[in-house]
Image (cartoon, rainbow, N blue to C red; front, side, top):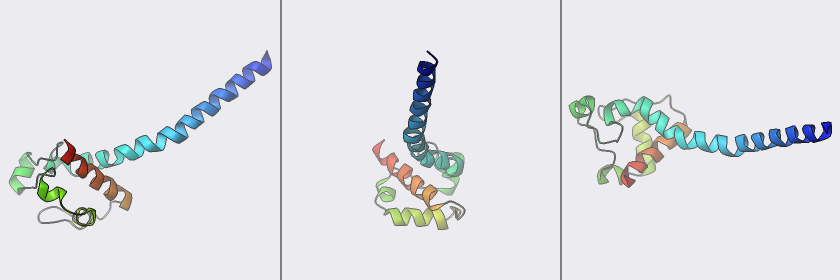
Length: 112
């Protein structure tokens, strides 16, 4: 009986660890662009990327879903994020992974 309980506990621990390994990083990676966008970009570009916020209208920010933005290469978007563009500040403190996540998140606006 005691062996059965030990084996059940071990199986449960292995199942939990497997779930954490396979599901944990994926969920975090999928949200990294969205979290960074909300923290750094949404105040001006808005939650939908349209730029229809008070700050966005005042600075005439671009609609991130527009063909003009979506036609930009990933390198161009990354450069604009990292170095700034026009009135947009530079975000040099972002890691390359965060910038890549932001570019992917910006691309998702075209699909909405």
